[in-house]
Length: 324
Image (tube, rainbow, N blue to C red; front, side, top):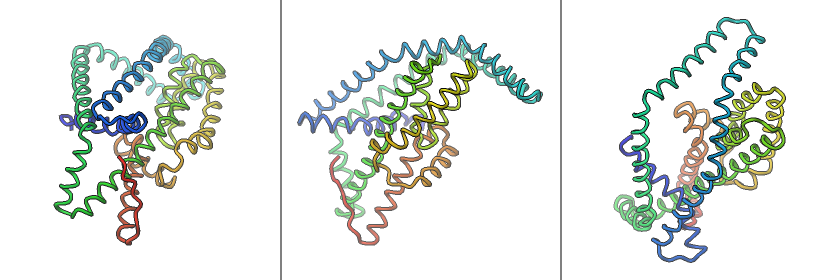
């Protein structure tokens, strides 16, 4: 898995960028695939540069401010625990956590050279992933035709065409959900940032917005998962600000569920809430944070496969949109 990571990440990157490529080809009527691929990557690099240049200084300032406030927050947490309980076990665990954090910082400093080497390896893997994704986007039609011929050898030409069409539907459903949820999470991050900075005047508004934006990719529970640590940190800094931030998150979470998600996501994932909840529990339990993020799309993909299989078995027509 470690050796093949650039291959997997290259395939994933190509799948993510494919809608942008199709958009340029259709909107600007670009027939040359090489030109469309170059424009796609230039556009993505431009967006990343703008985001990095705009957000990075604020992120660095917030992290520096938070690191300076850690001793104060630790004292407040210790005082809070003392007020809540004099249980020696609670204090023991708090001291153990502090010791582990100190050991972690020492290990990072001692392994600085190793970390630098890891960074260069990550850069090399990223470069390989980009190269692989470029070739996949350029040759995607040829790859699709080869897959049709390959499947046709074993299952017949008609079945092979159906398999490719089903893959198109699955890809479209999952990619539309991920892009829609990403847009919804970006809106939530901006709203939390604006409310935290200009209304409540919290000390770390950028961190608040980032945490909510990232965890919001997890359906139903994401906002609360991200909200707990940032509310706790702001509560330690000033209880009133932590309480107001908690109220803001509750209000915006309802706005997202009632307005933002229905408008953006519509019916991209045709699965019931109970299946989403079950998939999140299983995905998070088996694969950790990555499983939480990918649980709903994978569940939708599996359900789509089962639905199409059942329709084919029942000899019912399956509506295909054969555009990729």
